Image (cartoon, rainbow, N blue to C red; front, side, top):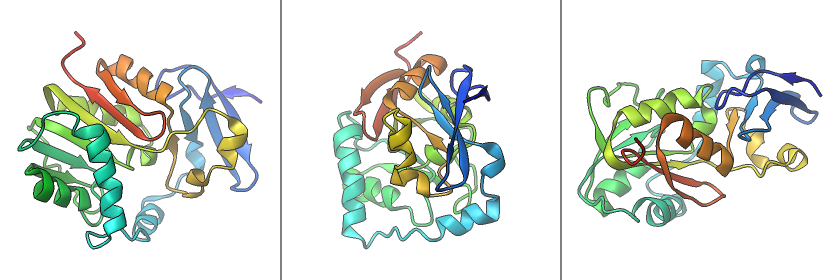
Length: 221
């Protein structure tokens, strides 16, 4: 294997490996464990949007609501945020999380989505909470967006991220169902999240080694 493509998180060299099943090359950082898809093999915008439109996520789907409730109860509402102002970044075609936060947690919620709610409503605002669920795995340059999240957080409050973690084993990664979604291009582990926290000076307050991460702004100086 050849060391190529500097890591987008920590800048280290990465090692490339290939998926025969998907005909895709990935780059793996042995330092922070970030894995990313080869840039020449990404979907274009139309292909990406078509893929998102296949998702059947609805406020009427109680299982999908419970998927978010578990995230909120386990990771987000360890903190006193009732009645606060939140941003749901990457809300999707139907803003289910906004609905839950407003109706069950009495929060005021702004939404942003590249395709479905593209107005950058967060500009010139700060929030008590930013949530981004099943989004960062779609981002070409995730560190850029983590810096954006930090910019729009008030001091002492939280950024909650949901994305399924890989376990830093190449053979298991190549057999992992998560990589079969062609719009998934960036893959994280809990170690990656620790590096992100250190790099942009957020405190990592919670990570479950599976899919939930919570950062806090204002503790590290």
